[in-house]
Length: 424
Ligand SMILES: *Cc1c(COP(=O)(O)O)cnc(C)c1O
Image (cartoon, rainbow, N blue to C red; front, side, top):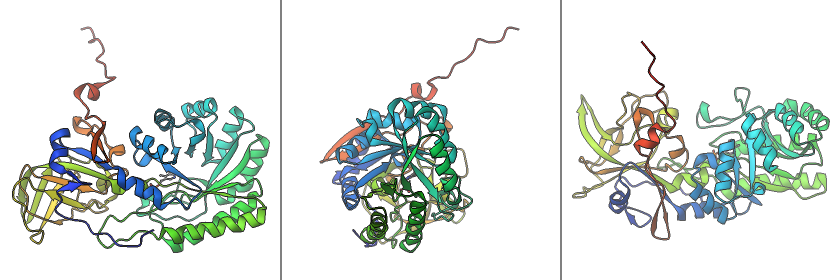
């Protein structure tokens, strides 16, 4: 547990003991790097929970999934593709839960074939599952009628959210479950990234009310994800002990009420991986535009989309290939990428307003590192502007492992076809 605030260096020479220059020599730029020691530490922070279920959408490389599996962490999948990723990383069906608000046909077929446990986010899913897997038990993802998130786009509760089963619909779900021979054995509330403790106690109370409405079939509750991590100087971690205590009190009240044990899961994505990840880019142009000074990189929003999507803030540091300047001499700088799109700016606020960052002087050929980039980083990357997706590298026990190669031109056009030219 930690409530300490974070500080971020603006000059960086290494990541977990590996010199940044040596990483770039080997893998080039742009390049994602993950530090396994950080991920391990984050897993250990959450050991008080009976089960840690990783929301793999935050960073789904199969090497990361494999390592989490070895640490005893199970996994959440939100699509057929993510189920296949989990299988490829060595998980058996019992280690995977399918969570979504809809079954697409492919996912439903896979759930049936593997007998996966489902966390239903719509009443319709109960019916659809009942048709292919009568007798199954499910958990329900409930929308308690309020939410919380660091932006509208990450808020996953309340009447504007598409996620979960509306709290007023529980009776209908119980009837649907009876009709289709489905048992509701658990409850889940994931209502947005950026939880604070005051808000959390409301969530716990809401979950308790719904659990009592469903009754004694409930054997599992899930605290969902949404544990925040500090992205800025001065932001702090949630007090994990207090977070656990709040959920544990809810669990204990339900155990007393129901007369049986209740298993308590947590389902983080961001918390486990965000701080392990770095996106290393090279500064390719340094230019002044009126009063603004720009560093332009060889990485763009096709590599890291959080700034353009949410106005998300990532700490930035510089690796100087030549003489290292004093960390005190900082200049307000705008940082952008190479894409033909004016929104390709890493230092922007929500709404697309260009912001400046106090950064050390730097030259072309120096590296710029976008930090706390392990969650919703590579997984949201794209080939926009004909760009190859970056490699991913894992640092583990003082070794560098390539866990995904940089894409090539063949990857870029895979599956594309030119039909025979029309005649005449
Ligand atoms: C995205 C998601 C999570 C993880 O959210 P974080 O904010 O990354 O912790 C957990 N559970 C579900 C169902 C999700 O969709």
